Length: 120
View 1 (cartoon, rainbow, N blue to C red):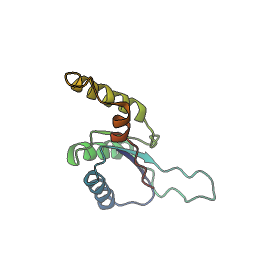
View 2: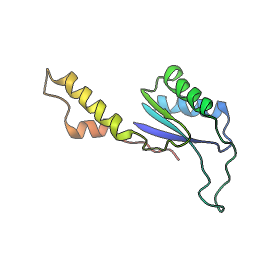
View 3: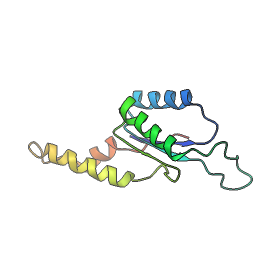
């Protein structure tokens, strides 16, 4: 499964770490981090502009400390960032791994295992 977290809304490090821990416990394998951008003046203002170094650090934390299989992290990253590419790579890898048995995983079982999880 996959989800995305928007940063720059006043979140604290312990809150992001708790969210990552809960997501892994729920079986989430892919996470993206993006910068919240105020779409109009009527929407909530940006609390903090996250630095590129901080985005890189969160990607390392997600992969190395929490074991996420993939993490895209940057100011312009959004929830669907490279999701299709990641999905196709995993489907192909599963088919290659299963080629000796039944010729690979069925499309419906792959879709079910790689469903998208959206966290608001």
